[in-house]
Length: 417
Image 1 (cartoon, rainbow, N blue to C red):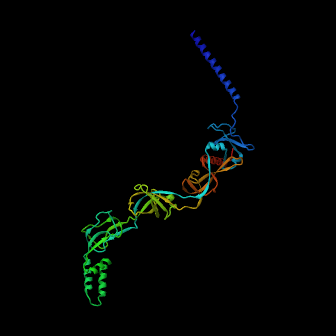
Image 2 (image 1 turned 180 degrees about the horizontal axis):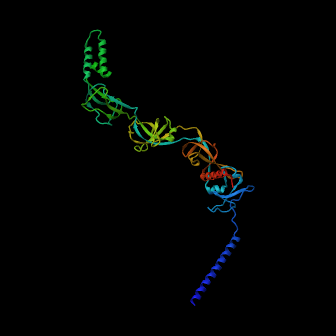
Image 3 (image 1 turned 180 degrees about the vertical axis):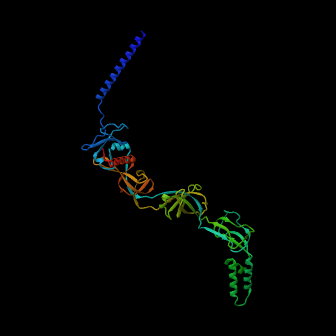
């Protein structure tokens, strides 16, 4: 009894499954017969031969009938025989161009000034250096500047020396000067010359002649205002003739050694105007000029040093201070230029996508190799390849370049299918 019930249940399930499958098959066949094929939104142009249909986003897939793309929610686009015969150029409808976000701009001809910003640090102007030496052998009796980096003014005393060798020369000169006999002029001039050879200046010789007394001490003074960067003298030490005692660097002008990128060094020339700024003096702009470009490129940073001269009358800029400089190279003549984003750089060549109007009113695009120049303010100079007024693609050009390259490769392999 129980076995018969189980067999009946199984038979019922099988009958229900068969009825359901038959209904599904009937519905599918009826639906396929009743549902018409969706027409293509992009109809083929009249009088032109369609080679195949494709999805612009997946150009390597081809279809022999119009319809919806199996990859994206968009209609397949026809490819005509004339388009395939045009080499690397391609044509798309305005609707597809809008979907791809294609934007075109015209190449212009105008001056292109390359603004360069660099950083650097303040350094002493090595042309404003005074090296103070001992003009005669002696002893340092008094030192007025006792520490490096002390500021001094022009004419300020630095040290006082006692020079024993001056005593004999001055005594001889005074003895000859006291004689009243005729013909002693030659001896007097010879004594004067001995004092010069001993290291005395004309002012010191004149002081001996005026006072009639021996002056064995010499006061060394600074001939410029600045900072004592080197101090090699101490009180009581013996110095020889020509020994360096002080090094004084002026601060009326300073140098800024700015690191300019190697790629922009050709646009910088000596004499170019510079605006320099420092965080130590917010809001202040220091005017200067490029003094020289040092003939050496850093192997680490690939930069070249531009030596900039800045006026510093109030001594606000000190060596080691960080500076930001804006160089203004001289404006060049008018050049053909396009937005930098329109240039496709492959490493071996530079390409722009040129846009033209086809015979059917649609847009045609063709990659053109160009020779580029300088870049400034988001624009790139075009030296060769296109002329002013040529329309180029500024956005979406990478998709067009891929499509054009694919079509050119197919042609080289044996022509379109």
